[in-house]
Image (cartoon, rainbow, N blue to C red; front, side, top):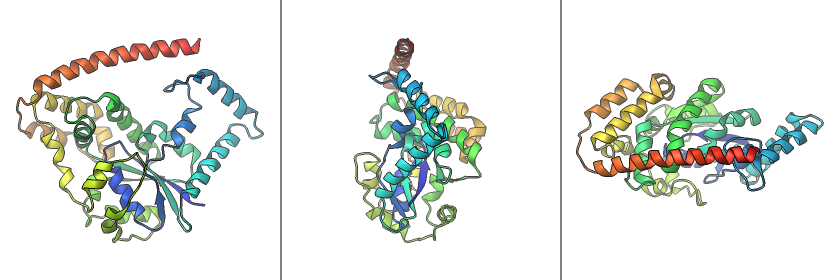
Length: 315
């Protein structure tokens, strides 16, 4: 049976490029973005999920059911592990060593992944958080300063992933996207060594032919990158083009802080210096300010609505 391999990162962190390179190796099977574990693991949660049939009651019922099994909670977890492993195995070809599950929002269940799949391999992929931010703005928000649905990726995602890596560093492997973009760096051989697979340098050229299929993932990256290039490393700077955006980025990296940035392989002072050195203009300033005010008000309304919904569900 194939072994699970989880590629853990924020959205827009370059994970699709890394996934395609890994999938070019004959020992690794994958699918675009399975998302298969999110509903399975959230089924036992009281927070972060609302269902028409009643999540609170469902969670209580599942907990009682799991407790009543001969081996209790461990039996439930073991059956979940077998179920998902069979799905991964069915999606793999004969002789495959790993099935690679790359689902960016697995940061929401990262501790569950380590608990349910102790035999799995875990690769943490880091990218300059300002590059992630800029990629979200350019790709999903079409250049507008609007985070909407992706705000939690920038904050909850960073906190969850850095915390998980610190707790499980001995079991996991970490790599920076910027290093992986350089075919001559030691990053790729180190990653394959962690997986116990021979490093096939040809995969760095063949990955452009890898078709992941499916509707999820990053079709933009698949179209744009047929070969490794360091060109994306500096692209984020063009997005941070006015004083408002620069100020927001300074606050953001200070919020992340030197410790979490250090876990990711970046330096707070160096990032601040890069932001300060960027040229400034007034382009999109008014639009950015209006969108920021609207976003703040919308978040307050949404948070109140969610608190009310949760309170009603508990009753």
